[in-house]
Each structure stands twice: as C-alpha cells, then as structure tokens.
Length: 573
Image (tube, rainbow, N blue to C red):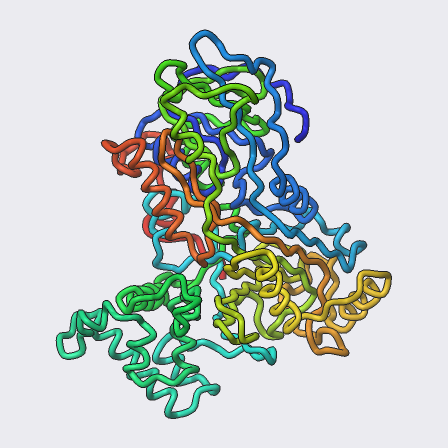
C-alpha cells in the first residue's frame, strides 16, 4: 500500500456512524444514515470511490485485483498499543480474488488509450427499468448524479457461436424470424396467461399449487418446447443454475418467483420514453452508482476521507463493546456504530487474547463465508460481436456450451457510446457462478473461445489488430469515430480479435450483523436487488427506529430534483 499522505486531524472525533469502504452497500447505508440526521464519517483506503463496485481505468484494474488477492500485513498506525481503557484489535484484509490472469495482445494500442477506459470490477451488471435499484435511485434523488443508456437487445448463445434474439413481448414474438409458427403460438399463449394472471383475471389465474411448484415443472405442464423454456428460464427469469438437474441446482426457481421476474421484465419494457428495452446501463460505468449515493450522503453532511486506511478497532476492555477505530495516521475516532466493507477481518496481536465477551464472537466474524465463487472476465475488442449493434446482453443457458456446464454464463457487450472505452472499441463483461477456480476458468474460456479470436502474445498480435483496424475502418485515436464498427472482424476466423483480457475469480461473501456489521461482496446476479436488500437489512439492524431514506424537505437547492425528473432517469438516446 502506498504511503499514507499527511492528513490533518479529523474534527470532530466522535460520530454516530463510521463507514469503512465506499462500495455500493456501504454508500447506500451512509446516505440513508445521513438522511436520517446521523453524523457519518465515511472512510476508504483507496484513492477512488466504489471499492469492489468501482469502474477503473485499464492501468489500475490489475493492481486492484492483485492487492486484494493476498492478505498483506495491516498498515501500522503510529500508535498500536492498548490504552488503559481500550483493547486494540488489528484489521487486515482477506483475499477476495484468485486465479488472476491478465493478457495483453496489443500493448502499444492500449497504452495510448489506457485512461479512456472505465472497467467495471463486478461486471456484468445492468438495471431493469422497474427494479429496486431504479426505484431507490429515483426515491433518493440519486438520479441527479447519473445518466443511463438503454441496452439494445438480449440474446441466447449456443456452442456454434450463434446469437438468437430473445423476444420480450407479444409484438416482438410476432416479428421474430428465428421462431417457427408453432413456437410463436406457444410463446404467445404463455405470455397471455402470465399477463392475465398479473392483471388479476380470474379465468386465467395460475393456481396456488402451481405457484409453489418448480417453475420448470410449470413450463413443462404448459407444453413449451426446450428452446422456449430456455429463453424464459435463463434470459428472462435469469435463473442461475440448471433448473432441470436437481443434483447440481443450488437455487430451484419456484413458479411464483419466475412469474415475478417475468412481471419485472414486462414492467421494465417501455417504462422510460427513451429506453427501447427492459435494461439500462449507466454512462461511465457501474462505479457511478456508488458515487451517486456518496454525493447524496455528502449533501446531507457526511464527511468523506479517501486514501485513509483504518488499522484497528477499539473495543472496551471490560465489556468488549465496539468504541471506535484507529486510523493509519494514528488518530483515534469514535462512533456508536460501525459498518465495514467485506475486505476486512479482525485479528489479534500474537500472544494476546480478546476481552472475554469477544472470545466467542471474533472467530465467527473473521471466518470465511463458504458460498462458492463467481468467475469474471473482461475482454476488449475492436469490433462488435453483432455488426449492427453496440450494447447488448448474451445468456448462455446451462449445458449450452458443454455438457458439464451447470450454471448460466452471462455476457454484456458495452460500446464507447457509454463512455467506458475509446471510440472504435468494445468491452465484454462475462460472469458465471462456480465452485472453484478451475471450474470458473473453464466457464469463462468456453465463451471466449467460441466468440473471439485469441492471438498469440507476441509481435504478430499487434499486426493482427492493425489489420483488423484497417479492415473495419476504425481509428481509435479519432474521437469522432463511430462506436459501433460495422466492418469485418478477424479475416481468418470471422470473429473479433481479442486486444486485452482480465480473467479472475471472486469470493462470494455475505454481510454480517453481529457485534460488528459488514457488507457483502458483489453477488452473481445481473442486477442489484439482493445487494439493496442486504443494505436495508444492515441499516435496520443498526437503526431499527429510523426510516430508511425518510422523505424530508430541505432548503438546500442541491437537495431538490433539478427538473430532470421527479420519477424519471436521465437517458441518452
């Protein structure tokens, strides 16, 4: 870790809440507490906002992953001894990333444009136009600080490199040329049933028995063919695991939950005037979401200090209760409540023992959550996977790439019109739940190999990329170049050539709400609903009597909507 800059002492030294880390759950809690008139100090050892939910320049991503793949010794504060009143419990980081593989196939081209990338650490992520995250953004006024763009389409991929369009409405079914007449009729009847059920029509109401049954059984009962079932289960209901193999399925989707997801998808289509589909993506990357809530918290009086590691917790020697934190600068700061990001665990100096009230709690707090892993991949290309499209989602259902594939694999392509990469380039985010590092690598490599040409890492890679650049008519240095290149990709394979990739596995950790509260890592979902639920739960744990984001009036002009939209989000066309 870099040397700690000479910060002046923080004043005041006592707060209602200290939050360490500026990831999304921490930022939401800080904003909610500040809105509830709590005094909040928000600290982050990083020089940027977002932590594991950030969007980073190309040059910074590898070092961030590497830093969080080991457990270095905690930075020492100027004073680490116990006082007469407090015991000092050291904080250290836990390894959260593994099997990190960074490949650079066109170093010259990328070095010239390194700072023009905003790469999501926890991609792929999207917003459904009607999901909890959009509602929270609108209800809190965080929409003042973000802009979005619609995702063009959703596809289902197969092991031959085909991308099949997912019809998301009755009108889209009618227009879809990839579906046969019988498939269209079956899908139309199913959507009519679901829409009637959601509208409360008694003659088409789905029975309670069916609602509690597995969704895949209900689809079988409806007589839907495998192709249509796959579309519904994995590209609309977004099931993670193979729903037809109970031996590997860790999360069997009930019909009620499947119908709720279809309802969300249906409600998202057409909600906003400029959004053509159900999905949105924030301009400048997903890291903007954490920053929006941090800005909201700052407006309400939250104090922010970046580049400030916290080295230890202070606990009462007699009661074992939390009292405060010790900064790397040596200053002690006190608060009634504490929220930690998932990076940290509590350790004891060798040869010492915690106060007796903590002896049973510390091992639980510091243990590793056994929730498996999520494999992630980030790829940069010069041409789009779909020549006529810039921003889209691709889902590979279980067993669509190889027989042992037990989970869905999701890919999101984002172009430069969302300000995440230079003009003429595209960023692909890939993710899949996995049990271990080897399985994760196999899942991500299966997608990369089916869609992209991977050149050898030598001087010929630059030549191959230059050839592709010339053929596609893209000039990366030209700021006026079109973001969605329509030229051919690699002339030999007919696939985009890989310029750069980062493949890594991330630990899945739950938040904890014991004597110290900690937030979860990014999960394997496509949206943020479960993470928002976790943030609400932690807020209610520490402030059970306070309303989560109470509606208050303020004379501060920054606190009011700027006219872009009470109940709307800013969308670029």
